Structure formats: C-alpha cells, structure tokens
Length: 246
Image (cartoon, rainbow, N blue to C red; front, side):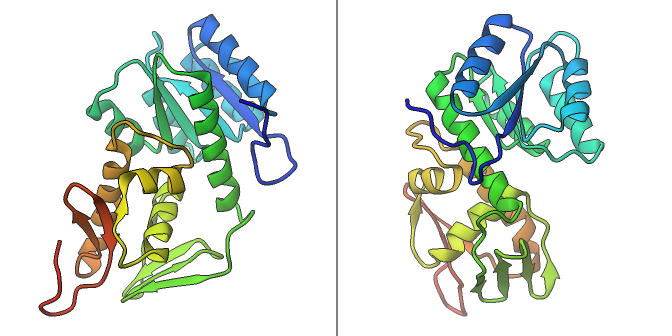
C-alpha cells in the first residue's frame, strides 16, 4: 500500500491510538505516520481521556478490552462530555452484541483483532474522509427528496414531514446514498464500498445495523421508505396505496 492523503484538505489529521499492548500501539503508530497522520498514543482508558481532551484528535483508534477502563466506557464518557470525535474500535471479540454496543455508543467503525494494517489504514482513511465532509469540506449543495423526506447535504439536515431528524454522520451518509439511488436495489457490498469507503467481502453486520438505526428514526414519521430485497440488499422508495411493500 502506498501513502495517500488521509483527508480532503491539506491539514495533517491527528489520530490518537489507544491500546494496552505496546506492540500494537507501535505497529499502528508507524503505519498511520507513514500514511500522513500525526499520531499520539495512550496505554490506558484514563490516559486516553486525558489526551482526547488535551490534543483534540480528529479520530481515535480505541481498543475495547483494557484492564482499567474499557474502550466502550471511554467512548461513553467522551460522548457524555459532548466530544463527538470519530472512534474506530479495536476488538478481539467479533460478536454482534459487541458490534451493536460499540455503534450504539457513537462509534463509527470497528476492526477485529487480529487485523491487517492495510485494512485498518483503509478504515481510518474512510472515517477521516467522512468527517471532513461532515465539517463542510466537500458536501454538495443539493437537496434530495423522497416523498415527504428531505435531505440537505449543504446544511447537513434531514426532515420528514417537516420534522427534523437527528442523524449521526454515518447514518446521514447512508441515507444520502440511498436517496441518490432511490428506486434501485443496492447490494450490501455496494453500500459498504460507497458509504464506508472500503471493499468488504465479509459479514454485512454494520450495514444491517445502520439500516435498522435509520428505520427506527424515520418510520415513526410516516410509511416505511427503506425496503429489504431478501438476499440482495436494500432500496429506498415510496409506496403508494396498493404499491409494493417490503
């Protein structure tokens, strides 16, 4: 893998790597520095919270299993303090409950140990790219509509039937992609590559989880818009009287 710019602008992104295993901290630090990041490290949860407050990183790579304060609790405390820094969890436990816990706490992604450095770098690049767009870096000045659902990419707002819907950056990106391709059935692989920014041939747990999040926020405000095509993927479409369901 050759070095590439980590963000859409010229500023060097700051990444905090948190892991109680020195060899993993060093491995990730070297790889991210090679790819243009400024990297700080922490060996414990309390140290991670101190550094997150002191250096204000653009992203945190956060180990879940640590002896004093685990990664989930670190993320919980960051969010409770109003710190919305993107978080990629490192976990040795590849279970759906851990995945859902991490995402529900406000995590942006997760990587299962043992991991390849290339895969982690790709995830870091994708999350930084999304964060840059969320800050107004490259958002298109475009209003997307599907029935009574409106998504304003320039202002980063979503409304349904006039009611504002609060979405996380990842939820927003997923909904925008579905709306740009409304009426089409999009595979899980397409969504992973286009929304999360990497090719991922394994489980589609993260897509299904975020589709569930969107449905939970949009469906109480009107008829379901996101439909499952069994064995294929998802589509966003309106359903009129007697129209197709899903």
